[in-house]
Every structure is written in C-alpha cells, then in structure tokens.
Amino acid sequence: MRALSIVLAGGEGKRLLPLTLDRAKPAVPFGGHYRLIDFALSNLANADLLKVIVLTQYKSHSLDLHVTRTWRLSNLLGYYVTPVPAQMRRGPWWFAGSADAIYQNLNIVNDEHPDYILVFGADHIYRMDPRQMLDQHIQSGAAATVAAIGVPAAEASGFGVVEPGEGTRIARFVEKPPDPLTLANGRKELFASMGNYIFTADALVDALREDAEDSSSRHDMGGDIVPRFVQAGEAHFYDFGTNVVPGCAENERGYWRDVGTLDSYYEASMDLVAVQPAFNLYNEDWPIHTSPPSLPPAKFVFEEPSRRGLAFDSIVSSGTIVSGGMLRRSVVSSGVFVDQGAVVEDSVIMDRVRIGEGAVVRRAIVDKNVVIEPGARLGVDPEMDADHFTVSAGGVVVIGKGEKVVA
Image (cartoon, rainbow, N blue to C red; front, side):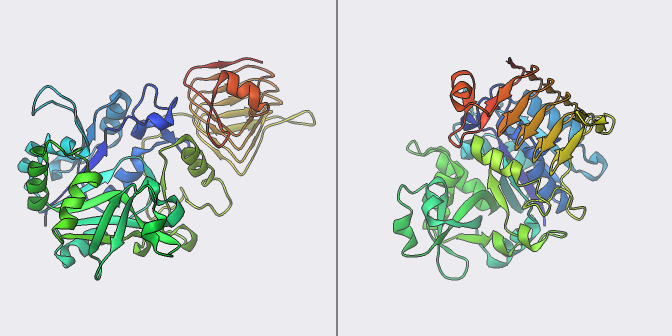
C-alpha cells in the first residue's frame, strides 16, 4: 500500500492579520516554539506517513525555510517532507483554489504512483492518528473519505456540513450553509468537515481533471471535489470522535481547533496553560515535532519584596528572562525579556519581545520583535487600544511584528 500526503498550506490568512502581514498562515507561531503547520506534519510523521508534499503560495518564505530546515527525513529510505511553491505548470497563473493546487502538481502524484492520497489542511490544532481513517477508507471501498467532527448546529455555517447516510456514507454535503439549523432537524450537533480528506488516487486524479475543465467550478476541495464524490455515492465520512491517540487523556479526545481568526487563535493558545489542559503539549507518546532554537533555558530572577520573577499557569520558552516581572496564564515564546514590575496576563507573547519596567499586558497577542516601553499599557483601556492597534471581535489586542508600544 503506497500513500502520498499533500498538505495544503497556500491560504492567505486574511482574518489573522496582522499576524499574517508578512508570513503565510501555516507559519504563524503557536504554543511557544511551534508553527501551526507542525501539528498536521506531526500527525502524519507519528503515523509513519513519511512522503509529504507541502503546497505553498502566499508569503511562503518563512514557511518554506521552516519546513526545509525542520522536517528533514531520511532520503536513504525515500522519505521526505518538501515544500512545493506554485510553479505555474499549467499556465501563467497562481493556484485558483485548493483543488487546482493539487491539479497543477499532478506530476508529483504521477511520479509517486500512490494507491491513496491524503489531503490535509496546514493550520489546525489537533492530534489525530490518520492511519485509523485510512484503514476505514480502505475497508469501506470509498473513493473519498472526509474527516468530520461534531459541532454545535448554530455554529456550523463556517464549515462544510456532512449529512450522514447509511453506515458511513455521506448522503449530502453542504459547504458553509447560511442557515445550518434547517439541516439539523432538531439535532444539537452537526458533522462538520475538518478539511482533511483521503482519496483513492485514481479517483482523485480523474475528479481533478474533470474539475479543471469545468469553467463554473471554484476549484475547491470542499466546495467542488467532495460534492462530486457525494453525488456519485462514493463519499464516506470518518468520525474524528472515534480516533484514539496514544497518550491522550479522555478530556482531550476530539480536540480540534480551526485557528482561522484572531479570537480562535487566542482561545486555542489559552487552552494550553491549564493544569489539565484541553490540549496537552507534553504528550510524549504522540509528540508535536519542531526544531526549537539553540537558546539557554528560561530564567526567573530576583526575590525581593518589590520585584520577583514569577510565572503562574504559563508556558515559558527557552531563552526567556523574567527579571522581576510576573506572568499569569500566558504563552511566552523564546528570547522574551520581562523587566521588573511588568505584569503579563492572559496573553500570547512571541519571540524576542521586550516588555519594559512596570508595563502591563492583558488579553493580548504580541508578535515577535515588539518593544513595549516602560509603563506602557495594553488591554487596560479599550478605547485607547482601538485607536492605536488591531482589536479582535472578542476584545483581544494584537500588536504586529516589530512595532513599538509607548507609554
């Protein structure tokens, strides 16, 4: 059995601005020293699915570097994780959609001759053993299998909705229904597509070629390719809630977050810091792989009545120095400096941020290389924050890369 994995990493990520101002969405840092793409790639690597191409397009330089430097596998055994930028093989245009991205790279599929093709998104936070989904796909004889997760019916308008038929067959697939409650028919939950698919290779290639000739198509995997298989009665769904991942506690089962907005990114980050987190980064049986920087351990200094370096319910990465400041319920990346009297609460702080003496940072996302001057305030005065910075719909203050926050 030969399997090829394709990770779709070409989206612009407009709803994550300013975090995606000069980087691709899958390259956005998460959880201290990871990138969003590390979660999808780790799931594939842990499952020994070790032939992976990463299709990139927008602002992909840092993403390409991260994949190339971090995800080096053994060429001796024929394994690889490699970024593939848009090459305009079919003409002078970029990828017209996720399906077109794969269509424009069918030469790679032809070179590998896979029996099955896994198509996974690059920017979700979750643990999954994709072998279990692949086993179901093979046993069912499906041409296409869609990973699905239960979501509240009232929130399903942002997803592709799967309506189950007999067994695991998909009776109907509706992409981002404007009124999902009409589909629910009294149910509290609906099955939503996770953006992860498995296809029998020949069936996918045929569908992509047909789609490429359809001038009315948006050339989208969820919006166009999956409905083709549903109409043909060849599409099944895989219930993500049944997936068993080694080392995961029961409260983690079925955890999946689409971090497509600033608020969802913030909420997923806050899920990491509880005593019993909803998503546990410390699972050694199914690790999240990355290449952390070569930095010394984090350090907390001073124990005096007026200044103590402290952290509570926080993740603190290598190279960070908390010099008489205080961290609460925060995710702090590498090389951060927190000066005396500074307070950081309920926040995400990225690489090499400098937080000055007496500064206050609350409910904020602070991108790398930001300088927060002594006495500055973030997340304290909503009106002032809105006048100077990006503020999410949920009230989270977001500071772009390299900015300076003055007192």
